[in-house]
Image (cartoon, rainbow, N blue to C red; front, side, top):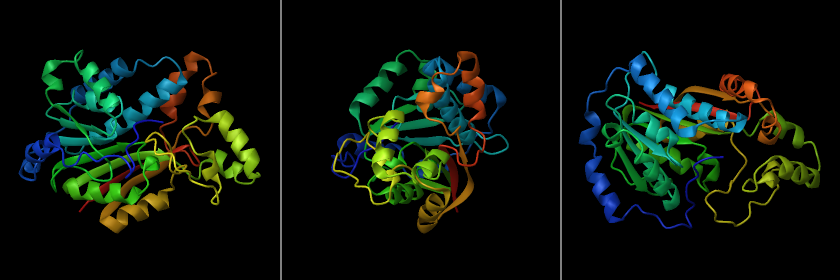
Length: 308
């Protein structure tokens, strides 16, 4: 899982001096800058940068790269207007932020709650093209309270963030606030109705916990597969607050704050990473790439929303 954000129990950086400066740098007036038509060459540079940064070798890394590529393609959608300012909420180790900076005329704000992750992004930046890296800004902040003025960004991206939040609808509300009219909010999150979860829900809770613990990361909440499971009190931002969402749920969250779902589907082969990791390497890339296509009961969901 990638790039979680903080819970309300963590310190918010929204009022720090760095963020006050950010509010002036990315203000409402700046959001009116003209967008630039995307070009195949620009999109190719972004894809090459992703390969260089992630350097995938097995299915798990190819799947991670494919997810970032899915978001990058959506941000730089052909036939539309490329955004000039993009906010990457929960940027993690910077693969998406740094690769998008290779696009023509795109300014990126990478935001995460953990300073260690931002330091990792800065380390990667030192090896990138100076002309593109100058368009990247890093901000430490909480996803529940984005430290930017209204109507600042053309696009907001949140990859695997929603499931880590105690109050997920606040992210939708904040995304709506900082987007300019016509701006887009793009996100991925685990699919709560994925095939494995549908099957596990028929088993006793003890069996669910045993099976899920052997298939998933320690930071997940296998007990949340049952509605009566306890959420726990661990404040680690990497920890799942719930085991995913459904498309109707994210559509409802978005509608309540004024965002309209333009695209929404589930994807990713519904088998655990520990199972997929043993497939031959020659199949890793095609399976991971194919896995980003719409797939009923897939492990993840992708959604794109528009602000009217």
